[in-house]
Length: 240
Image: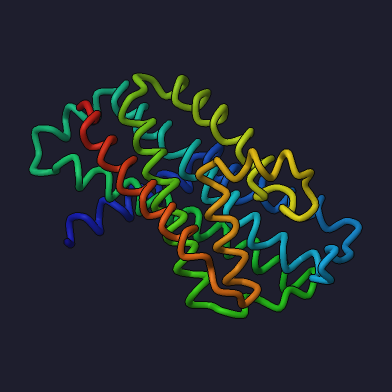
């Protein structure tokens, strides 16, 4: 366990030192928050905009860390033969996957904390009503999207290809899932399309916890199923 903790700490430090990873996970969501809140206001339900935007963008951060930064890191390690060198150590593929997931989700945690801090000090954010429910939904969303990122990283041979594929998966998803704009403001056709994306359950569950509503058991089950299937496929497809 101590060795795993050391690996996670090193990987997180490397991610924070990477200008692109730090920008995407920390600065970019903060810029989007500022753009969203320039006019402030409320949603049709009467909910203050900030109370929807921060939980939405927390899933946006998870998606960036999981689908863009994580697979690129894994593919770069394969491209530079780092993984082949790790093969000669006691590290298993499960340990490598766990360390990479944990490090990149800690990066997403930092990004989420930055968003929440800006929301509190600049826009009067009140914070989540159901903290345990919101945290549980956030972690389950991170597990499901992280598993997809690991699957991409397990299959793609180069860092550049992984970045392109990750962005191609990530950006269409955020626009229809409710991670960029509140679902209730999207056209019905976009909401229907977004319901088929792996990011939509995470957005719905995190927002439910934030607003104090019970998340749908189906929504939670979908995220758990995505995690089980995608992580199993990633371990099977993994190449040193």
